[in-house]
Image (cartoon, rainbow, N blue to C red; front, side, top):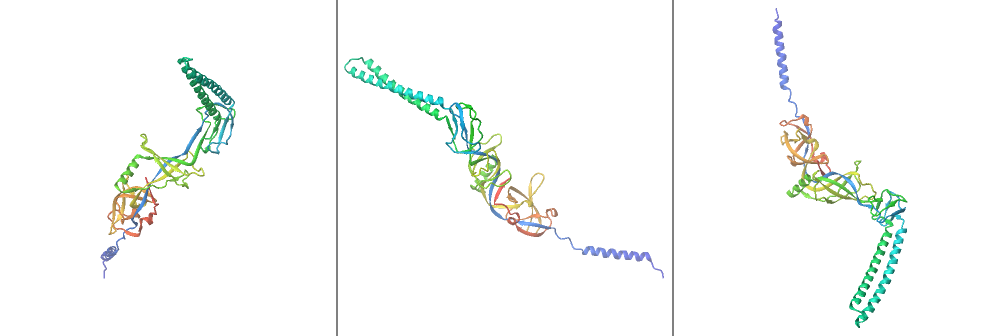
Length: 387
């Protein structure tokens, strides 16, 4: 009996192929990709802006002499705190005292001349009543008495001036504050109202922080306030030091400049900050966090859920009620902690994909691994910073 080997092999191969195709047909479809989403919520946030600034003294006084002379002594320690009225410098005053003495002597002479002129005027007036002297002589005597009185007033003014100049030989601190280095030493010659200051005093508590803000940001804020999208709020100003630490005392906005700098398109904001330990020094660079408005019912989306294309447009991937991935173009404006403040495109209740973005694309089904509120996922700070 002969066996057809080739036919048997063909039957066996057909059987194996049929079995493999059945196994492949029976293999289940791959599960939808797993993603992590957050459910957006609305909340109230503070709109803030972090601006760079420089520290400036609250008061500055440049000490200059108002009388000339040789410096006799400097009665302060450089870099120390001085009080208003404290003696800083003393000038040689011998010449000034001599001028005061001459002015007093001139006053005595003028008073004596005035007394004589008054008596002459009185006698001439009595003689004029009986026509013993002419009317012209009487008028001349009266005028001479008035001139003598004027000379007395001039002599008194000269004394007052000499006393003022003598007082300027003692140079006092005009304000309280920290005094810098002295530009003169004992024996130096100074002149009245000279260009070079003897020393400079700065009041450092409180102290100013001057920052600049773009006029475009101001216009945007005013539009939000006018539309009712935000409401105005006056918040304390927080100061960040050069090393990144937060300054312990909050400041207060004192005023904003009424003119915009045409070269930079910005305007000045001046902040008053307590400085009891003199931590802030003039010229120091800081950053100020200013709060300007409150946004009600704001929607926040975690930063990992926001995508940007090469053109800078922003979008988010959301899941609809059937767990289908949808691309949603959005508009964001500020950061709030780890989240973005949404202006357009998303609403409270939307489910935004924050993990597994590389595994999905619009139109496919996805499986939610976990779902949590955006506030719990992002844990934002209570203030929103403009970017």
